[in-house]
Amino acid sequence: MKHSHCVALLLILLTGTPVLGKTVTIKKVGEFPLFVALSPDGRHAYVTSYGTGELIEVDLKARALTRAVPVGVAPLGVALAPGGKSAFVACRDSGTVAVVDLESFRVEADIKVGAAPNAIAIDPRGYRAYITNYGRTKEGLLHIIDIQERRVLGTMKMGTSPIAVAVSPTTELVYVVNGGSSDVWVVDPAQQAVTKRIPVGDNPDGIAMTPNGERAFVSNSQSNDLSVIDTKLGSVLVTVPVGKSPFGVAVSPDGKRVFVVNTLSRNVSSLPADLSSLQVVNFGVEKGPVGIQVAPDGRTIVVVNEQSHSLSVVDVF
Image (cartoon, rainbow, N blue to C red):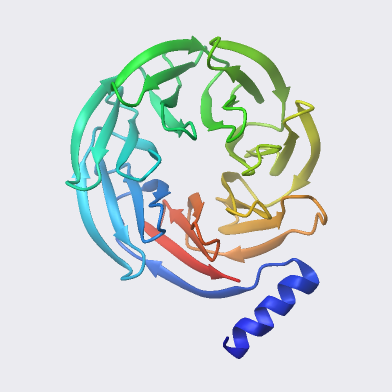
């Protein structure tokens, strides 16, 4: 093992704090890129380009754009089905969810949902996709899609401006972040019923869950903090100040750390997911960061920078 890696490992063991390595910026990633999903092997990033209406593939090892495909007008959220063979893309102004075959890199289906779909989460077994929809009135929507049949199974009324969604990896309950009503609705998809409403901070925007499903982390863009939800209790354990206008959230695959993108601070905040310390570590990225994912090996963080039309690829140890 290289000396630098030994030192990094020792610092992690002593402090629990990630050590940052090299940061690479990949430029000209579409126009106003917003969200990102990573392939199961961590080799490729799939980025929605809001301005060009495309899904863009980026080779993270080569640090280069490889393919792009038109998916619809104003694409937002993207999620990969288990196995990484297809991507689901919410196209807000088309009112559709595009299904992209990642081998041929072609759209193989367009699922009509109407209004303004924006975020997507897929259950761990790969049977269902859940799409939040701003709707055309004060009430938003949640669509349940059968992944194999490529059709809508049901639609539920949600709170005001549902903007983010996550599925518990253990219970398969669905957590919907409502930006307008500043709460998280817990949905039982089998019953298509809301079982809990959890108040969080002001104007929440993003959500991520630990691999064991015990905690959910919600970014609050107006109160500039992170709400940590105990999913068993169904309530907020603690609220942690982060940067200005936090948006995207991601948890490391080992469940040890949570990362929050602060759009106006132009940085990313990190803290222990088990709350053993509330000390927040910040590191800078490019202008207008919004989306974030952690690679499967936990050693690479990919941040989408909307205003600079780029990706920041950050090595961590």
